[in-house]
Image 1 (cartoon, one colour):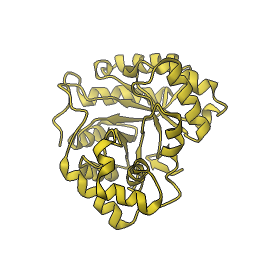
Image 2 (cartoon, one colour):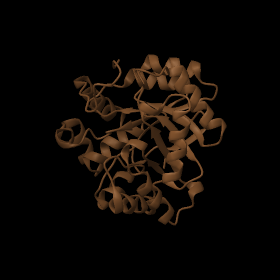
Image 3 (cartoon, one colour):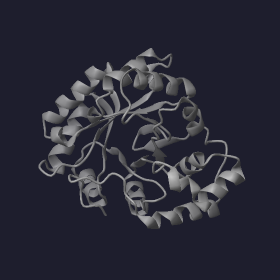
Length: 274
């Protein structure tokens, strides 16, 4: 497993995303993911599944100290005081004494970055989270957040896949030592898997198109991904990407697809994207 060194946070490059998973299914999949070799589990207060994620982790044979656990605070709760209470509530639901990474899920239109980052720093200073970072921040927001933070930020978690150009964000994160962690890393499959750049690479390496796309993600410096699946067989498939490398030509061909600039997660409350 590739480990990302992101301002002191050792983040497993491939994690298990839990968005939309609930109940016994979620707990079981988290437990199976850990058994399969995943050591990075991603959730959020908004996912309404932290109790289930915690059950899966605590039912696993893997010690908590070997698991990198990320959760996120919804933008309605990122004011000073609210953010700290949100993280405390997440810890209670997850039944864990700390997060490995606490993120601001989305920037807010009503709470300044300075105030939110100050509250996030307090979470780290109090030991509620070992590391802190952000999600869905633009390049300018990253610059502002880094300047406002006493503790180093470790991550910007953003939508990223071969149909979306995040090359500038990748450079911004690299400049400040942040990892870029991709959600929706497979762009929900479908047509993407039929693209010649991906289909041909899969044939060349004896891998599935999904494995090719995930390998594309992790071959970038300090970049990772948190694919989600509800299919047990795909847990192992998604993880089996560290025994081969894409060539420079294959990376270039897949990267050329980013010119489409198709964004899946774009909402009324989203920032003005770069």
